[in-house]
Length: 398
Image 1 (cartoon, rainbow, N blue to C red):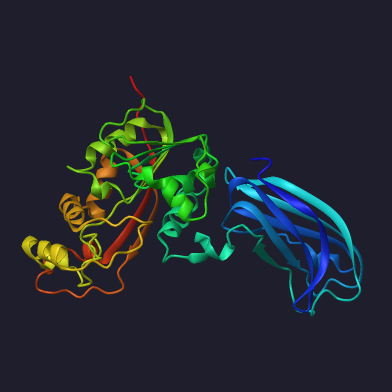
Image 2 (image 1 turned 90 degrees about the vertical axis):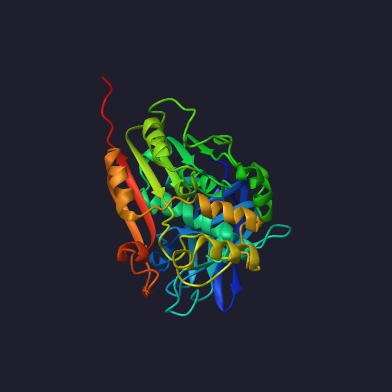
């Protein structure tokens, strides 16, 4: 992606909000650039204060032109200055140079008040999509953000520590609509990412991308979506460097141990596994929050009562990138859920010689027991989410 971005000159000084700003345009040539960034250095009177040692990153930008303003710091005095502006983006989890522009400008007086530091602003040039409408500006209430931006960053950086193995071959097991898999691929610059799901929710991905201001060609050729079953992975032994599975194993019909064995088989010795299982006994473990907000109602009520809620209540549909499952589908999914607990899941991973590397647990602030929930362990009720990364300690074949 060496031609992913261009700096379109001339960059010139303008007055904006009582401050001097170096203004010009950034052109994104690729369908999407993940984590684009700018850094600026100015040489001249008071120049040291205008050295942006840290790159200013944005979440991602689709193809188009953007007006850029670098508001110069107040410590930059009057006189002639030279500047060097560099555009970079995150490729294979490291800065990749995309474009560089050098020039000169003259200030008649201080660039700003003494306390003002270097600051940036970006504005889309028509007919492009306003930056405010992109998912990383919308935040956690947005389904696309939670899966494309947040989940991908959680997997790649938080749980897998930007491992060099992510630059190799990645398998996503139970990819659903494929949004997270795409976010991982764009964030890592991996050699290849194969995402599987027998229900083929990813067939809607081009439609989802359009709705979120990304073109269909934002899906690189190195990303492949297949309608395969996790229990019978059609891949050779030791063929992937990383296997990931986000909020999927609780939905594997008939259990998930065979799928874990398959993940181990195709994962290379020393390869990395990331897995985020849904925990059945937590407050949201039923996956039926659209039908009831009563705490732990799936543990407190009979199956007949739960069924009556699902088919009798008017669902408060959450944003699912345009998907609206029927009550019958929700009821089927509820009945297929695997009752995963933290303790048992850890034992199962260790039995398969997955060596724990990183773990993160999110807990309930307070659990109030009722007569119906007294039999359940504290840890199971209080643990909302489990994120696990493991190293595949694989015995060599004889």
